[in-house]
Each structure stands twice: as structure tokens, then as C-alpha cells.
Amino acid sequence: MENKRIHWGIIGCGDVTEKKSGPAFYTLPNTALTAVMRRDGVKAADYAKRHHVQKWYDNASSLINDPEVEAVYIATPPDSHAQLTIEALKKGKPVYVEKPMALNYGQCIKMIEASALYKTPLYVAYYRREQPYFLKVKELLQNQAIGQVKHVSLSLIRTPLPDDYNKEKPWRLDVNKAGGGYFADMGSHQLDMLLFLFGPISSHRSLVLNKGGLYDPEDYVNAIFQFESGVTAQAIWYFAAPSPASEDCIEIIGTKGTLKFSIFDMTPIVVKTETEEQVYDIGKPAIVEAPMIEKVSEELLKGQYTAETLHDAAEVTRLIEEILSPYYNKATL
Image 1: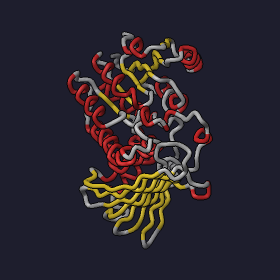
Image 2: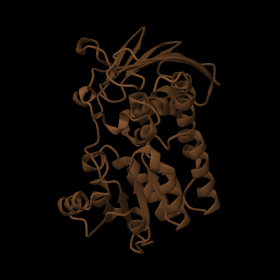
Image 3: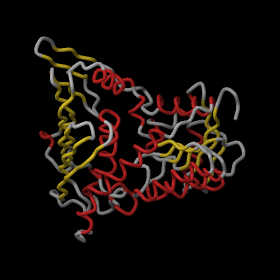
Image 4: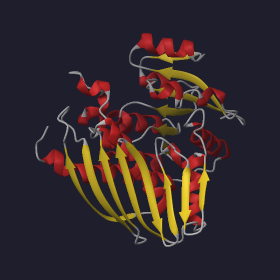
């Protein structure tokens, strides 16, 4: 690799790569975007042209084997994450793969084993861990701004999306591609944040339903968690609610007060104690994955890789699988 930049290739240049991640690879000082791939060659060529990328492919193996591609970003649906990740790792090319890490926990373990076997770094795109907004939340908790944390309440309540009413559903509602419904896709970010802030989960219970009847996968999950630290959490995910009910909120209760923030809306962080209220208005990065991509690239350049967060990413998939398995085992699909 060069001393100053990592040359990346993107596999799966779909919607998520248009604004959330893709531009980071050619705007950050320590990255360069060398090639992109999409199964539809016309769309791959169009993406390459619009983003000023020199090369495009309609075959993932061709991109992985390109000698000018030093590291690979995999932004395909979860059902292909394990296969593509392992193929790239075998070639000695570091991988940054989208979340959820894989279709199931077993695939996550195979990916981790491949990273160790081929001595090649593997990262998962739980990019909120590097955004200033969430680092501020963690800092406030570590500094005991609300005292000792006791309980967490989490809610993500959303109205149906236009595609939910269509006969042809998006891949995020295909359990064979996504590992679940919107809970697997969006809830994974929140589960990862719980692990990031409060550490390992020791036990959990849940209720999983489909209330809206718009599609086969779950649209409602209610869960309680206990962390090894003793902290408890109650969470609700509901994706078929009327618009007045929409909510994105995490409230943390401590011995001295409360802290409120949100995962997707990133509303101002509010800390309340008996004596004062403090508000921290920290906006989203222009390219939301840029802080994580910059950190990953810097670690690769310096050879400072650690697999610490990789196991949390696998744990998120394990939790999703355990929470959803009773619902799917009831042969509702």
C-alpha cells in the first residue's frame, strides 16, 4: 500500500453508496476510489462516470482481483457479505463490510475466522461509533454526567414506507437476503450502540409480531435486556405506526439525572439533572460514514488493526437472530 492513501474498490454501488459512504472514498485525504462494481454493468458504468471513478466491473471477483485495488468495501445485501468478504480476505485485501455483518451468526464467525487465518483486517460499518455526536454521548456517560447508569429506554417508531405497499418488496423485507425485516436493518444500529455504550448483554427476552400486515417479516419487536454491568434496557421497534406516533429516542436514566438522544434523527443531546439542563447540538457529518472510513483507512496505513469491535458486530447479528428466530420458526413465512 502507498504511504499516504488506501486505494479502495466498492462492491455493490447502490443507494447507500451515493451519499452516505461512497464520496468519502474519494474526498478523504487518506483514501482513493479506484474501482466500483455492480451486477448491472450499465448502472456500474453510470456510477463510475458520475463519481469520477476510473474503473468499473459487473463481476465482484474481477474487482477483488484487480491489483490496483488494495482494500474492498462491500455494500451488498447481507446474504452475500460472508462469501464476498472471505473471497477478498483470501486475496489479502482488507474488508470494510456493511451492516448487519452477515445473514446469521454462523456466517459472522466464518468471516472472523477468515480474517484471523489470512491475517487480513476486517471491519463492519457500524459507523456511528466514530461520529462526534455519539462519541459525545459516550463521553458524557463516562464522565458520569447523570451519575451511575441504571436503565435505558429505546424506541424507534416509524410509518410504513411507500415501497411497503407495493407487490414487489424491497430487499430489506426479504428475510433470505436481509435476515429479517426493518428490525434487522435499522435495529442493528441501535443494538450496536447499546453494546458500544453499555458493554455485553447477559440476557434478553422479546416479543415479535407483525401488526400491519403489509409484508411477511416482523414489523414490531419489544425487547428487554440486562447487561453484564447490571444496567437494564427496554426497547420497542414498530414500523407500521401512524405518523403522529413516529419517534426515535433513547433515554438513559442515571442516579443523578437523564440523558436523551436519538440514533437516526440525531436530535440535540439533552442532559437533565436536579439542578440544570444542558443541550449539545451536534449535527451529522456531511458524509455520515466518513469518520469511520477515515479511521479504518488510517489504521490500515499504520498497521494498527485490532479486532475488538468486530466481535460486537457479530454479537449484534447473534442478538438479531435470537430475537427473531421464534417468529420465523412459527412458519409465518
